[in-house]
Amino acid sequence: MIFNIPYTYIGFWFSFGEIFYITVNAVLLLGYCISWIVLWNKNGIVKSLLLSIIPSLVFTISSILIASIPLFVFAVIFAVTHILISVKSAKAENADEPKIKNKTIITVIAVLLSVALIFVGTLGGLLVYQQSNLGKLKNMSPSDMIEYCCSNKNTKISVALIENGEITYRIYGKNGEEANIYDYEIGSISKTFVGALCAKAINENRLNLTDSIAKYLDLSNDKYYPTIERLLTHTSGYAAYYFESSMIGNKFAHIANDFYGIGKDKILHRVQHVALENKDYPFVYSNFGISVLGLVLERIYSDSFTNIMNDFIRNDLHLQNTQAAKQNGNLDKYWKWKQNDGYIPAGSIISNIESMAIYLQLYMNNTISYLPMTYSKIKDINANKAVYKAMNIRMDSVGMTWMLDNKNNIIWHNGATTDFNSYIGFTKDRKRGVVILSNL
Image 1 (tube, rainbow, N blue to C red):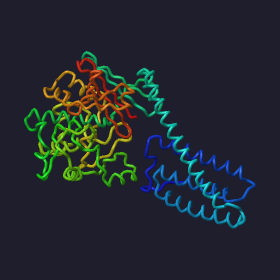
Image 2 (cartoon, rainbow, N blue to C red; image 1 turned 90 degrees about the horizontal axis):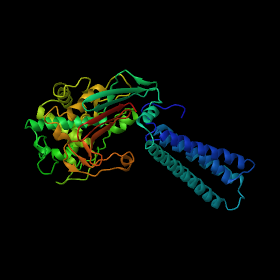
Image 3 (cartoon, helix red, strand yellow; image 1 turned 120 degrees about the horizontal axis):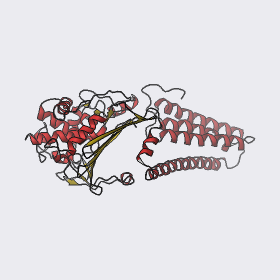
Image 4 (cartoon, one colour; image 1 turned 90 degrees about the vertical axis):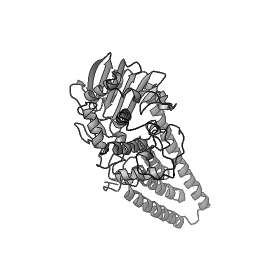
């Protein structure tokens, strides 16, 4: 399509989608041109099929890759009419052509197999490229990685290193080091704040790890509901998230936050209808589970989660420039949130490198008495993914949202939203720690 109509398309909806789109269509267009050249002086069913099926595939595949409803509809109409008319014309002009049916079947099968090979080849090439890039990481120094990432003029990477109580800051952009302080979404590092708030509630005897959420939420009494501990350790049995119809609307409205508009009532409704057993489930990283904890904390402290968390950040952690559901800062493309959104606890905090360094120092210095319980091992999970292993990152055990790498003796968490990535970690002896914030 020459242009896309708002609210009728999503855009490229998977990693390397644009590269896949260009590669597949380029090969198909090349095939179309070759077919024209080879069959220039020939007429028949094979030429008619090739010159009608290939452009039909270009339009149809393009519509799927950018999830465009109008393009898909018109692509189907175009494909059906163009192919039927071409075949009918070929038959009329070549009524005496022998084995026309067999040629039709063979041509269609050949085209479809060729397209399948193009898909497989392109996907295979992209996977090899991705693995190659991961392999390059092993030979890159931290400065090499930063220089590579900052090749984009809009990239800003902020790093804080804490060693023996001293904090060193570095902010990087395309032109090297900068002095500016930037505001970043910290994504799922927000979950460590939820863990810290739960620790405070435990310290105040308002909450116990062994409590069922049914103790705090208005739920039916005829089924099992997970404990606070299982929610904090992602072993409750809840999925990462549950599909809601508003997610489709968000895609077509080009709202980057998939969880935008999923209210607390939807979270509670899911809790009431998901059937679980009273057991430790295998580790499944759950935004939903942490969001349920947000509902529990609201009942404990009799206020909205956003107000509770921001009060905790200001008055207990004494952090400046750190806020839940803030939605703005001095960079671009922050996630939107509605006031009553249920997934706010899972990843809505915006902060800067100075504030996050102080946050990390609270854990390393044990400044607040209840914080050590958050990074103490609760369960072994052995949730080590291949992509993490390639970078020597491990998830061997889990505390109250914190991940424990027992091989390298590191306590850590990471975070990601659509346009931001972050990392926070410290050694178990609490002598070295690092925070990395980026708009990548």
